[in-house]
Length: 268
Image 1 (cartoon, helix red, strand yellow):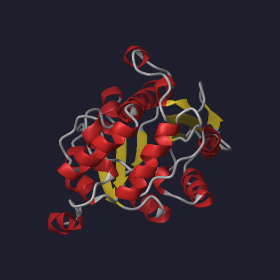
Image 2: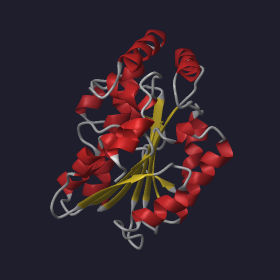
Image 3: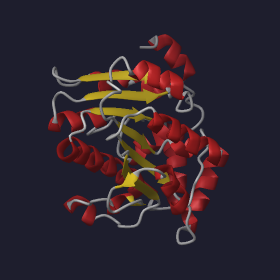
Image 4: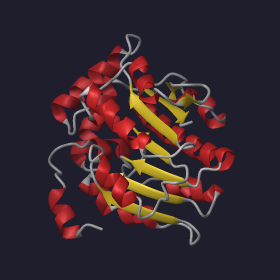
């Protein structure tokens, strides 16, 4: 674990940050007035944006429950963890299977400050936390191997994180490199902010964010998001609005179409 003093020095409270704004939208308390101000301005441009932050979170829970309960996955590599909130990956997985192992990865200093909250799991299982960038795949895989057994299936969780890799070719290469290192039976769970002619206010909100916040976000079309699953067996219903991926009763009451798309794919 990184020294807390060094981590605190890396936190910039003068500029809004995406992890803190998402925390604000989902009802968390780990944010600052600058995040709240910009979050409110973005919500004015796109009133439904808080809905897709929540949709992404609920998608994570349903995907992890399916993989742990129905598929039998016992290992999860969650990159771009974000700030801890209710029902984190290890909580959902270990509720199903107490012996599940989870490795969280993020390079956000505020997330690292709260990382210890993610390290409280069941006695039978194990959770770990790595300070690393998504692009540094070799480091992630090498260090995650201290906790995960890469001879057994792993669920790679990339929720709202490849949006920070602006170059398309690089973003696809990063996901491909990570999946290539995992054995058959592993799964990719990925979500991504989309751009669509039907949602021009989303484009306006993202443009505002990229002028005022950090890090910059990259939108992609639903077809571009689906490309991350090339070579994998897409689970039904495919790459869809997060609220439409195997919705439960709570999700059926939420807006069906949100600008956050997600899917789950299996490596044969």
